[in-house]
Amino acid sequence: MTIRAIRVIPCLDVDEGRVVKGVNFVDIRDAGDPVELAARYDEQGADELVFLDITASSDKRETTVEMARAVAEQVFIPFTIGGGIRTVDDTRRLLMAGADKVSVNTAAVKRPELVAEISREFGAQCCVVAIDARRSDDAKSGFEVYTHGGRVRTGIDAVVWAKEVARLGAGEILLTSMDRDGTKDGFDLPLTSTVSDAVSVPVIASGGVGTLDHLVDGVIDGHADAVLAASIFHFGEHTVAEAKERMLAAGVTVRPPE
Amino acid sequence: MGTIDANRPLIAILDYGIGNLHSAHKGFEHAGADARLTSDRGLIAEADAVVLPGVGAFGPCVDALRDSGLDEVALERIDAGVPFFAICIGQQLLFAGSEESPGHPGLGVFDRMVREIPDTVKRPQMQWNIAHRTTEHPMFDGLPAEPWVYFVHSYSCDTGPDVVATCDYGDTLVAAVARDNVWACQFHPEKSGRTGLQILGNFVTAALTENSST
Image (cartoon, rainbow over all chains, first blue to last red; front, side, top):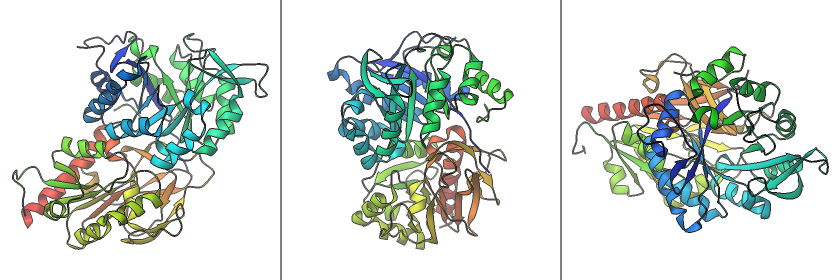
């Protein structure tokens, strides 16, 4: 017997330690405060949080470490930090500050051993590999890995890469469809199911969520183990609790909102 | 030896140089303890309670614990009857050994093995799951009948008479064990939201109770 509870994960963009991209809760004191927003999502029943660091300047990265420390002091659900992580040392600083996982993307494509190094040093459970994929006739699976926020083609087949990072020690895969990202048209379900079925580690579906039913589709048709969304939660369209109620009504197991 | 503030028990979180202990530290503080990350034997001996955390793989954890010498300190505190809480890999370290790391024996407080979760499910189990209580235990005081807690693990402890909670993932897995002054859980109470903080608080209460009775 198995309980497979799908995780619902809000994703927040942070720049120099501040949440950006117009998170718009009613009553929020400071829409840029990662601690306050994380606490709000925790109250709504979020299972985890992902902070995507878009800080451009590498000498400002210490602000992200400070943010991780502040969040970990107040919020007691797991959180991942992704963006700009290139080395084991980058990873160590974030984990020691209280992040539970780091997510690596471009740096892993450039140097796949990074995945093995992080996994060996800190355990697979804290090593998330983010894969940004687009549809491509050149890839055998029909999906190709892109880097640099979806701008740079790699020529690597997304399914081949997913299997490779799982072999190297990734604890899970954060899979984003760059074709769907920002469209609100729903997850790329064939991409999600193809990758999820190909690997033995959990897959987080990302990119394109515009309605609560899209979350359900990502699980039932996309075979995702977790669903990530940003705008539908940030702009007050839906709470995480509403998302979970819809998923429960559709027969998807989730940790019920308290 | 007591603490300065009788309502805030001193909890020593064993720092043997492994992983992220920040969350466990803050979690116990949040739950009302004077929590210290420490490898100081004097402080550990003074503490009202001891926590053995752990994250990552079994072998590196048990090797680091032995290299630090805190394995003996932990066993000594357990024998002394001090409230003791082992979390995640910490729980596994109290067992005899793990399939994950052959040749790296555990502390053997529980004379059973740690084995890989069946490959019929995705591993690690990385999700919230229900801790099904198999018996009454103060670890779960004040919680709903079926509390949800956060698990991250690919290996699981063999079952036995000391199991106090299980979860269903590929099999009936051990979620928590307890014997006398020793509590241990596979899940991460410090990452299980309000439910987890209640569990940490229950241990703080146990530490206080023990402290006032000695």
